Image 1 (cartoon, helix red, strand yellow):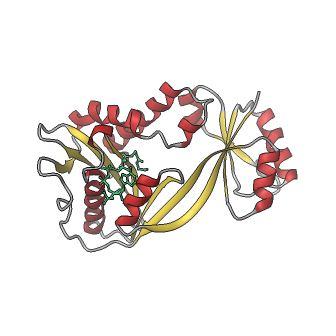
Image 2 (cartoon, helix red, strand yellow):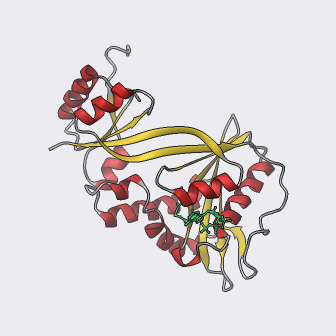
Length: 250
Ligand SMILES: CC(C)(COP(=O)(O)OP(=O)(O)OC[C@H]1O[C@@H](n2cnc3c(N)ncnc32)[C@H](O)[C@@H]1OP(=O)(O)O)[C@@H](O)C(=O)NCCC(=O)NCCS
C-alpha cells in the first residue's frame, strides 16, 4: 500500500474488546489540518469512539492542530534509559531487614493484582474520565497477570516478613538487539518510602546485566515525580518525551 493511500489510523482490537468501545490510534506523531480531517473521516467510517494520538512535543503546529480538532491532553509520556552495569548483587542494599526480593510465583497473583489495581493512578486512563475507573483498575490487574504468566521474561516481587508480596517489577528483553525494557513497577501504598521500589529496580538491573542486555529503558508519566526520582537516582536519564492525546467521538 502506498504512503498516500495508507489509512491515517489503525483500529486497536485488544483495547476495543477490553474497554467495550471502538478504539483506534493515529499512526503518525505529527498533525496538520488536512490530516486531522482525514482522521475524522477514517474515524467516522470505522465507527471509532476513542482515538489515541502520541504526539511529538517539538512541533507547535501539531499541538495547535490537535487542540483545535478536539484532542485532549491526557499524559506526558517520558522514556528514560541507562546503560547496563555489571551485576553487583546490590539488590539487598536498600531493603528493610524483614523484606526480600524474589522471583514472582503464580500464587502471588491475587495480591499482585490487588496492588496493581490501585498503584497506577498517574496513568493516562485514570486521567480520562471517559474510561470507567473500575475498568481501568482491571486493566492494570490484567497487565500484571499477563506479565506473570509469561509475557515478561522475568517478574520480581518484594515480599514482607510473612512472604506476602508488597511490590513488583517486570522485565522484558527484546531480541535480537537485547534491549532491556522495564514493564510494570508498583509498590503497595502502605509499603512505600522504605526502599522497596528502588530494590526492585536494582534487582531488574542485575537481571538485565546477567542477560547481557545492551541498555535498559523505562516509560513513566510526566506527572509521576516519585517514579522519575527513583529512576534518576539509579542512573536513568531522559531519552524521549511525547504527549498522549485522546479524542472522543459521539
Ligand atoms: C514509584 C514507586 C515504585 C516508588 O516505590 P517506593 O518503594 O516508595 O520507592 P523507594 O522507597 O525505594 O524510594 C526510592 C526513591 O524514589 C523517589 N521517591 C519515592 N517516593 C517518592 C515521593 N513520594 N516523592 C518524591 N520522590 C519519591 C526518591 O528519590 C526515593 O529515594 P530517597 O528515599 O532516597 O529520597 C511507588 O511510589 C509506586 O508504586 N508508585 C505507583 C506506581 C508507579 O508509579 N510505578 C512506576 C511508574 S511506571
